[in-house]
Length: 183
Ligand SMILES: [Zn+2]
Image (cartoon, rainbow, N blue to C red; front, side, top):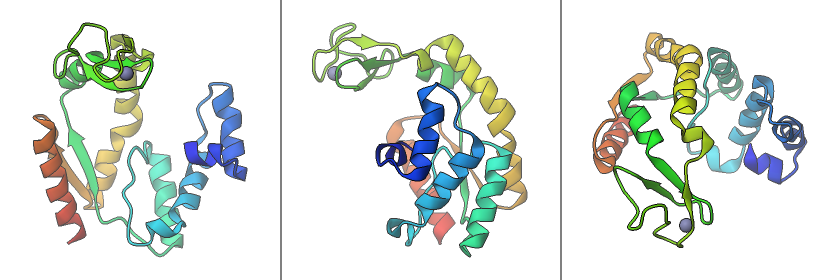
């Protein structure tokens, strides 16, 4: 979406109208953006969608797009993390105002409190990562996105991954699951 907006494609301009006034980009625009993107050459050998679909209507639209392209999904990965762990991860996250680097108060604390290790910029907590906002985001997830787990389980596509633990171990689990999915 960001790329389409930057390139000022017809769809990008349409999406920008919503983004500029802080509104959510409607499903039908997002779905058309995805459809457009999947037709690009680099998607020919295959692709991974991250963060889409987020709702049942989006998943149904994706099915329709893929059917039209004579493609189907090989699999769907669901990263399993208990709610308390998600809150701990996000609520401890700090972003650099200057370079955008991320730090974490518990898992990768900066050498000097409040100061970016990379550029010396000021670390702050994004509004998205404040505990109350995180709780809201999780409620939206439960209501709108969690139903996708059953949707894809019923279609025999779902792979559940235990996503608690060190980053490299979780990475290994993801790569293994992807290997199974495309085998
Ligand atoms: Zn920085």
